[in-house]
Picture 1 (cartoon, helix red, strand yellow):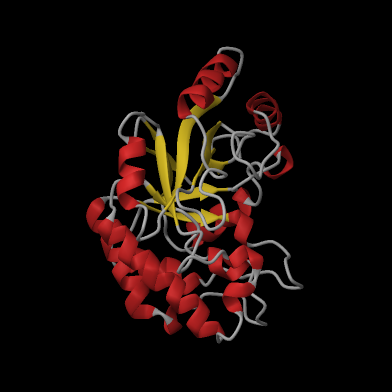
Picture 2: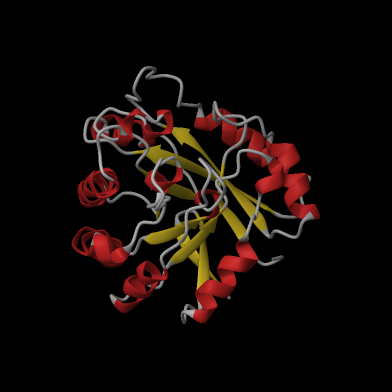
Length: 267
């Protein structure tokens, strides 16, 4: 694992993380990672609290640079923007005054509802719940292409109450093809987010390999590995397992970003 950068992590600048930049750097080095990108949350107009999921990138980056002076691995700057149809202008204005190594675009809220709280799924079939999430994702990646990585396309399966916790390509082929074609055309990365594939609500979501096969079939080559770690113990989690999956499917590289330029690491 010593050649990989964890491209999706959350430090204590995110309200749902208590991991300091210094302890993350120390742990990642001790456990063989090549680097970490700190992609703290920016979710403007989040349901219930518009200021909770926001931070000062200048302050975060100053600390990253200071810790990096004493670190033996790469420490990179990033942000995870939560896209909603109602906040694209505000996100663009916010980002205009800062520079990052990586921008992750994610969908955390659906029609003003937070799936994490569980109410989103009430009264919906599995296909309805997953499908609406992917519809918004497709709309957002087309409407706001100024990002590097599409974060956790399968986030909606994490907290679902259904027996099936997998987004199957066969069920959402048209929507997923729209997403993939937009990523490929604009040179963006599809993320394997290992935080999705953990035990929650009595089940572990499964990655549908047909998703990765179709992405590659359409010409997609840019893949990132992100733990979405909010604690140091999860940094680089399951990277070796998913590296083997990617290699088996014919992928040649995983990617991380520096100054928003992709760097390719052979699998």
